[in-house]
Image (cartoon, rainbow, N blue to C red):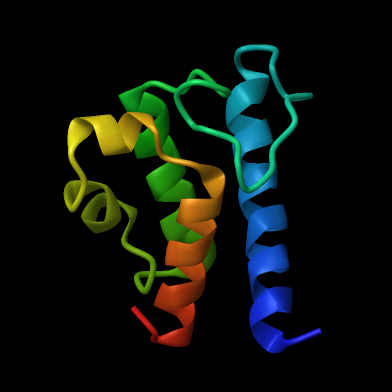
Length: 99
């Protein structure tokens, strides 16, 4: 297993925990979360939830991971279609300096 694969798997696990904590407020903490999971369609997250997630990402990974900047680069329909895998890739790229 490569370091990148391990990193992506670890980041996916970390983000899944953050999302389950967020979803717990809605009673949805048993939702299946994988790379193809969509924030809007599958998890029904609203923009305020993404702001909360952004704060949790910053707390966990530090300033290297800028979720607001990541979202700002996208059109609304791209944000609506955003998947957990896309966020995982962004975090891995931010942490490894490959962004």
